[in-house]
Amino acid sequence: MFLVIYFTTMLGNLGLIFLIWKDPHLHTPMYLLLGSLAFADACSSSSVTPRMLMNFLSNNRMISLVECITQFYIFASSANTECFLLVVMAYDRYVAICKPLLYPLSMQLLVSSFVGGLLHALIHIGFLFRLTFCNTNIIHHFYCDIMPLFKISCTDPSINILIVFIFSGSIQMLTILIVLISYTLVLFTILKKKSLQGIRKAFSTCGAHLLSVSLYYGPLLFMYVRPGSMQSNDQDMMDSLFYTVIIPFLNPMIYSLRNKKVIDSMRKMLKRNA
Image (cartoon, rainbow, N blue to C red; front, top):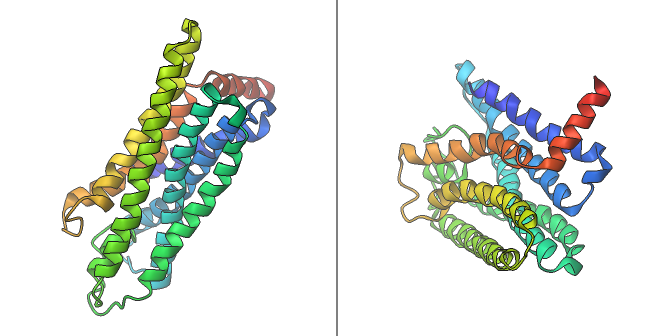
């Protein structure tokens, strides 16, 4: 089942990137952001799922510390980038509807999302190197996430836990606040419009993004911000599975199937290749 989900995830996300790249009509900030989100989803899924499938099929489930930290960095930087991209997409909807003159700023924020995602993950990697790992080296998780690594550390990880709580909590709360403010302003603006078609189009576009934001932030808040996140329970693994496997699988469908331009572009490409 996970193999089918992974191939469908890669097909959906890479297919969306290819479609946006090939169709000049989709070379706008909105679709470039959508393509960037698809790239982050593809990286996030590829950092976890292939290794997880190998572990299912093999008796040798060992992983070196370097491989483990590399896996965490790729996943964390992709997840952080996606977190920032969701905010930029909310801002993009705000400026497109409320402040069209600020529209070019979205491209600068797009680059900043990738830089911010890479740097945030690098901070946690730096603090990981202050820890030592002794004989208790069994990770009770299906990939190298940061919390399970803290649990097998011989060094007191209190500082690391505090850093995760401060950075992850601040970023998630701030980004959620920006998304809510952006869509509140968008809501007030579109309600003033007299065009029923314009209102429906705005609600359709914003609704898809709000659904994606809700699905993404819920598990992250439970995993990294809630009190007692160091406690061992199956809920942590279920939350992790949701945002590492299920969300990258759902995002292309959430955005593509509700987007007329993407569907039209797909139909044109299929007709040309038929």
